[in-house]
Amino acid sequence: MPIQRPKSIAEQVKGLLQQRIRDSVYPPGSRMPSESDLASELGVSRATLRTVLARLATEGLILRKQGDGTYVNERIRDIDNRYGGVWDFSRLIAANGFEAAIRTDSMVERPATRREAAALGLAAEEPVLALLRTFEADGEPVIVTTNVLPAALLRGDVDPADGRLPIHQFMHRYCQEQIVYAVTDIEAVPAEERFAAMFARPITQPLLKLIETFYSRNNEPLVSGLSYYDQTRLRLRLVQPWG
Image 1 (cartoon, one colour):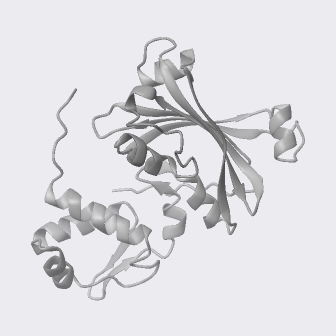
Image 2 (tube, rainbow, N blue to C red):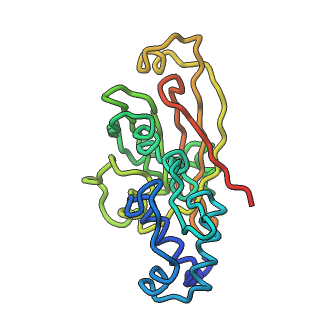
């Protein structure tokens, strides 16, 4: 197994500021503390802090206005539908103006399918934990997702595990693993009868199918995801940094 490289000071500061922005410690549109105040609070040089702020600006999270200061992008709700490169469905639902809830439909250990084994680098039919959940917007189902992870990653008994946690929190709590990024394939597919009934839509109306693989910092696959998404209820917007 590759040795995990310790995070640099700049990476630690960047992660802290990203978390503060996500948690609205610095709300959308607000002015952030000055460089000198932030550098002093965090115990880093202004050169390090400027490097971090430049990266956050490149990602579109902040706006730097010469002579005026640094501001959190007021469109952060559009950008923050992704958590570290991972779709956060609850945030996406909330960003569309709905109250989000997660219903755990099943959580079972079973052999991996051929697709799951290939995505996770497992042997055929190696044990996995399959977590089937429904995401709701104001009590109505809008996303059905199956997340599958190697059973060998689990630390202890997950019988009382909280399936309502976002997948990155679930992996951190029950596997002591951190999801860093995901690769997602998106395609429109005909609505299967069960999904048409669940989402109350005609079979002729397509759904979005998301096939995801979630990775660790060491580029090791942690979770395989398969989701069906009702795009008629939820706007899907991507904001991509250029720089």
